[in-house]
Amino acid sequence: MKLLRWFLELFKSKTDTLVDVERSMKAGSMDRWLRRKEKQYQRRIHTYAVWNAHWVMVERRNAARRLSLCKQ
Image 1: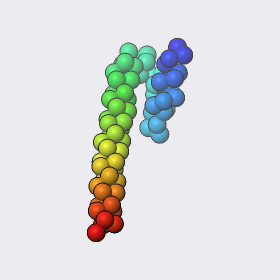
Image 2 (image 1 turned 90 degrees about the horizontal axis):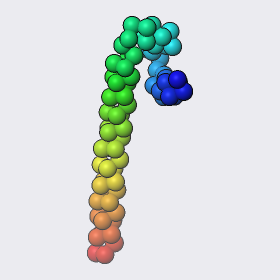
Image 3 (image 1 turned 90 degrees about the vertical axis):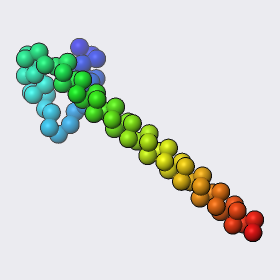
Image 4 (image 1 turned 60 degrees about the vertical axis):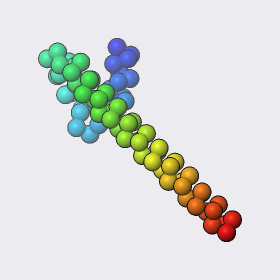
């Protein structure tokens, strides 16, 4: 039950209220709901990772450019 509460805290969004969650639990679709939320969360993490990698690349490129300009 503690794990479930943790999940609810983690994925509490404006659309999903606790009442909806309780209702879907009674309907037995809780695991489906959790899986959907987890997928959304993973997608978000993936997006952040991609953007971070991109910016690291950009920063390195700019630094290299700055260095080569200084050398001239």
